[in-house]
Image (cartoon, rainbow, N blue to C red; front, side):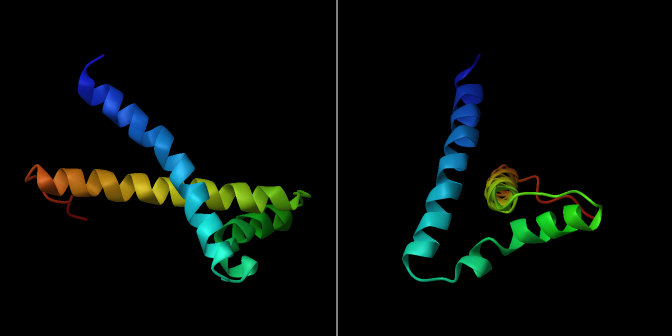
Amino acid sequence: MTGQHIRTIAFVLLTGVLSVVIITVLLLFGVAPRAVVMPGFLIKSWGEGLGMHLPNRVGVVSTVVLLWAAIIAIRFAIARIARGKGLPQV
């Protein structure tokens, strides 16, 4: 593996920790818990609409995963712009 691969793997792993830290800081500074985990509870309610009974932790974990994916997407978009390729046209 090259150094670039190792940096990318480390970034992806550390982004998961960053997602949890962001959620913790939001809760610590008084943001309503329902507002913080709203994306996850939307996914949870979608699953319940399909007839599955999902525990609350599904909402919390899916919020972390969505935040994790958003941070990674932003990072890769910034790297692509920095390389001069720009964002893909839709």
